[in-house]
Image (cartoon, rainbow over all chains, first blue to last red; front, top):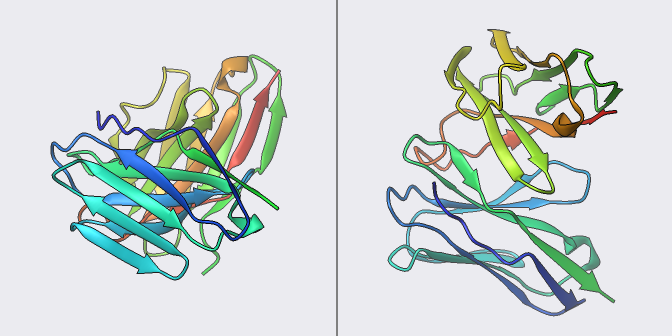
Length: 109
Length: 117
């Protein structure tokens, strides 16, 4: 398996920055996805990294280091609506997405 | 596009009953995936289809589970007989390619919340 590891929960205040780390096994790497899932809803795509470095999309950025088997999702200027679970996922050698357990981000006023 | 459509959104049934979950993928997507999500096990892939053909069903928990895709716009996941431990949210997702082949991502339906009493 891909052995994806991410923290269970993180809490931060409105307007702050939170960084969600994700580590994975590096064998057969085919890119790394981040999904957002609000309670009771479906996961929705946030970002995809296949090359090293930082990719920025508005308030959200995703970073990848292939040699270290490490990625992070950076959420800036946190808003209450950012309270959700954030799932890290990477395809196995057959192209099937393997998901981490998710990191629950709680944004407080 | 309407996105991936699933029905029913909620299903409550009694142990031993047959349950059928339905999915309509996004038009033009060649891949369809069935996932199950629970607090204990997270999001697990059960089975996926390519061009209506089942490619990998290694995630199907046991023979009580079966899935079909009779045409490009419809798939079913059936549980017979259902058990309380099958209680979960079942998601259907579709994509135009497999993850890792391109940046194409999977689009998830709203899910079916199944409760087996």
